[in-house]
Length: 54
Length: 226
Image (tube, rainbow over all chains, first blue to last red; front, side, top):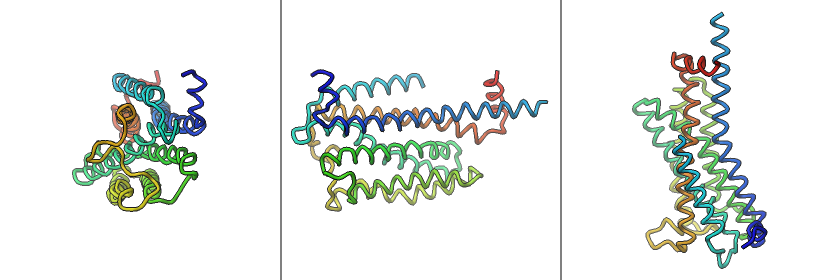
């Protein structure tokens, strides 16, 4: 089997790869979003504490 | 966490390799059936995570354990994600196979209600500022909604649905060939491990936000600023 055949998925390429693509995006988002939120939260808290220390 | 990630990548790699390359095309559906390697595990996870949410919700209600509340609410968006994946991938399979993106059959409709339950949980939690009170409200919602879980599971048997009946989870021998079954189970395991990873990430943020006034959070914040 060559790559072209693999991506064609017997004519169902659009459906199969859209399904896998959307799944990938949702799964990545559910890990990346909390990591970004955590960084933002810590940065805001640090700023708040610096203001309080002044 | 690096260990969990490694296990996840390994399971995912084997599952995808087995499902997309090794497994033969279906004799009726051709290659379109390969969507099941994400559709079925995602649908299983959507039910599993809801049950986790209901159980931890009950534990939080009865014993007031903060950790249970945090696990409950940290699971919600991941469960919503898996429910969304199950619906969208099912739709993408349904179009070429059934000829319709969507039909209002019992399985599809009850799974859509599950998505709304998840969104309700997330919305309700966000709407109440006191997070301990929010957890109690959400736990009750999650427990009431648990009635939907057996409905989803048995919908294909109780009603005459367009959605096919169970292939793997029945007492009989699974009516799926082992070269197709093994990747499916590997993907299911991979999604379980993924849930653990994502849930821990959500729980860390939730814990920091809840304990924002405690000394240990202040220390972490101060340490991260350097």
